[in-house]
Image (cartoon, rainbow, N blue to C red; front, top):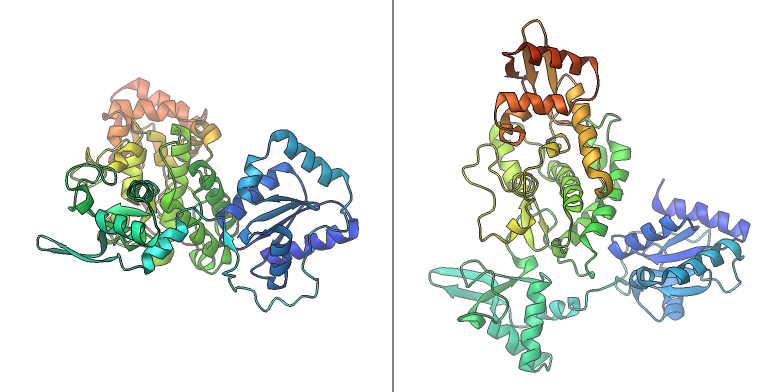
Length: 502
């Protein structure tokens, strides 16, 4: 059922019942609209979502009622609350009052308008330049900078850096075109750097120093984030919406992934209908939402939030990579895929390899890697968990049939969710086979590749496996084999065939 149809059905219910409602005017691909609707969904109030990209006839009226041209615009019955930011900042007692109003009072005659039932939707898919997502305060400045005369080519030694500008050129432009005093211009440069609108160019100065700090600082070269030559799947346009907190954005992405999975993932989580998913409009919306990862602030994430965030992102990125580039079919293609497929997250590029070995394994070398993913001066090192987390290996799905099934994870009880995933994996014969007669235990290749994470020796590995099995005949057999001593450990062949349902 399409988003618009669902809205039409709910509108019918509202009209016949005369009950109160929350009206949300939104556009597609707007993260603040999604966050507002997710918040309202948790309040248990009837929500009528009106997409003004699909219903342009209402735009003038909405502007007249609200005096604003940003979305979302939210009304509880006829009371205008404002945008997502206003909704999130409501005092609990005021929010409760509005919820009661909608649940207990009939809809007043001057409630905000809904589309006419027979209104043509020929304009569906048009975007409306008049209405934008809640914009970041620096977004318009960046837009002007793109069209100013500041960005050009600069030579440092023998290298030519395209689409760059120096700190001096930026400050001069802010003073001349934006009438800023020099101190304010320097402060704005610092804000653009902090908010990841621009990045310093490798080799042009100290990466870690702030804007205008250090020796020759104003000669440092910068680039707008969208002009940085990375291959990230969510790059190419700058996220101009005001950033949403990483934990919140993670929830929105998770909801979007769950929607896609519910329609295109097999019941056991083992295979994906990639073709169906690529044609689903929800996948396009997921791609739009992934753009918001570019400037998200990650340092405030707790260990649990970080685990859930990066596991969910990894599994979604593998699918996104398969849809965009095709699934890898041999060892060389797989190596390239995991070192190339990436997202821009918080101003830094994270490949699949970086997420798994850099962040989730506490910056340890991966398979066929000669060095750790993050060097001591790499800003991404701040993201790495302090220790390797062995349970992540039963949550990450690399797009092959031998991988653990795909699920999504939440920070609230991440450890028990991961433990359950490990138990399920070990219960399966792809994960562990106990041969009592031969005193042999055959394990998934995952245990061979990441042996260091499970203790480093066969004995510690087997004890780890025993400890993480659910009570079952297999566990009893393993206990018997281990107590007899001299257990042989071998590894099962890995099924690299693509987990596509076609």
